[in-house]
Every structure is written in structure tokens, then in C-alpha cells.
Image 1 (tube, one colour):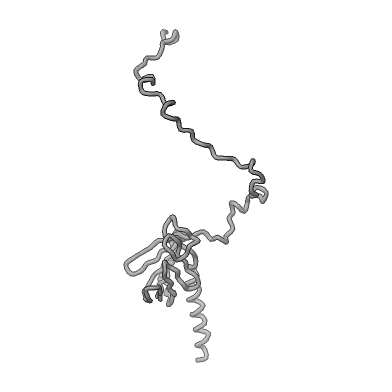
Image 2 (cartoon, rainbow, N blue to C red):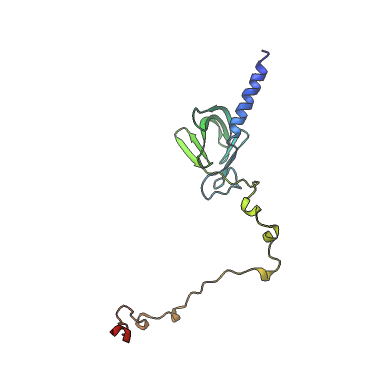
Length: 176
């Protein structure tokens, strides 16, 4: 009994570390809004052993690392307005840093959302004075406007020369 507590603590820490590796926000589709979690058209989120899906939440329990794969099999204890259920799901790190989630008979690929708190090396390298907003309205450049001719200014077919049937004029250098 004396060694039971340290062994349980090691197992608990390992389980937490396994599920934490999938923490993140993932797009449901290419045009998903990453700022909206748990709704249609938004994103999915995994944080601290909890999966936040569309109108449902699942506790990710009993993690089992999959041999020779960057994947973990979980028991998902889920609930929504429609009730509660339990299912098995496998989480796999995608080759592109996204998430592949496999439920019984279904596989889903989710791209990672950008971390809103992460630094951006492109904008971080721009001097502060260059990032400042324009000081006066005169500094704002309006976009170019396309001008579409009206019907009267477009030549009619009878007024347009037929360049394919007209012969070019011959010059003295052509006579040579």
C-alpha cells in the first residue's frame, strides 16, 4: 500500500500529459471562424482533457497511446442538450499540425487555428512607426475605380474595321 500513491500520481500525470498534447483550437471547415467555439461554422477546442464540439462537450478519459503512431485512443464521455453518451475516439496529430479524429466508422480532419496570443514574426519585425495608422485623411489612398464604357461609346460592329481582311500597305522596303 505504501507505493500505491506515487504510482497513481505518475499515471495521473502521464494521462494529463498525453491529452494536453492535443490542446488547441481547430477549424471545422476552411472558412470557419476560429473565434467561435462549439457552434456551426465555428471551431472545435480541446483543452485540459475536455473536447468542446458543436453543442456538446466531452471529457477525454482513459487515454491509451497507440503503438508506433502519433495517436491516442480515448473514452469520450459526452453530453449535450439531447443527453449523455460514451464513445471511443482516436486523436491523431496530422502531418500539417492539424488534428485527425476517428470515431466509430468516421474520420475527420481539422486544421489548426492560428494562436491569437502567438507572436507574428512578419508584423513583429515592422518598426512601430511603420505600424501606426495614418495621421490625416489625406494620407489615405483611395482604391482605383474601374470605368465601364456606356453603350453609346462602344463602337458598333459596322464601325469597327475588320483587321483580318484588310491588307497592310506596302512600303518601298517590302518591294526589295
